[in-house]
Length: 249
Image 1 (cartoon, one colour):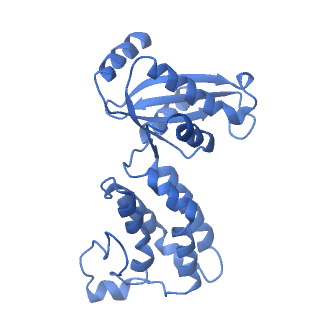
Image 2 (cartoon, rainbow, N blue to C red):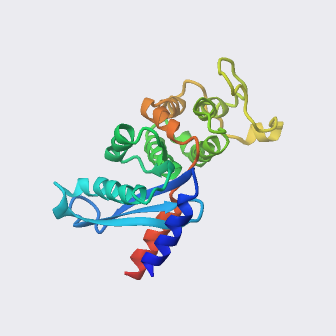
Image 3 (spheres, rainbow, N blue to C red):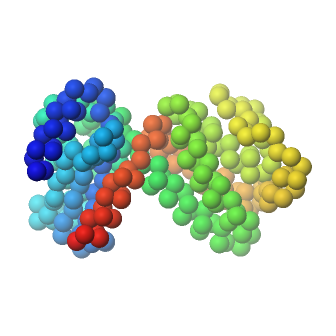
């Protein structure tokens, strides 16, 4: 049944010139004691699994290398079926990032926005618990929503995405326009009425809470990673699939 379904899907994908895949790996246990890793590729258009590979730790040097092998083996199998892949979305696994950069530069490599947002959220929560930064805690949800909005509305332009993202350091201080950007010079929301402005817990520019936010927002690695969010291709369906697998097993 699986072979028949896969063959039909491969036939469909061969006729497309811009196949977008999302990939993710799941190990049988957390940490460095995993024995197996399943790497799965899903077609974002049909929401169907294209291929998956199960890798044993005995096939690689250590458990950390299983996900990369699963990625490479599954991708090779798909390409051997003459499928033209334009974009692949994954998490920020450093070995896969290097593999895409070195061996697949012709493909667009996107990061799952959820993984990026999760990383930012953890940093904001950690800073919000520090003395003098408590005010930052009430803004965390809004900042993460802003990150998603920036990726969803950047129109494929990495510069616009970064400018929209960075604008949060102004908005959070009740400043809604600023000079110096190439594309994005003021907040996209409607002017705030007086009651809204009074009720918001705006951060004071230069305060410890605001400085902590600026440090996180302007982090060089994060800004570099934003270049991989311009198409906003997420791997949510794969995450749900793995949850179902865990429940069934």
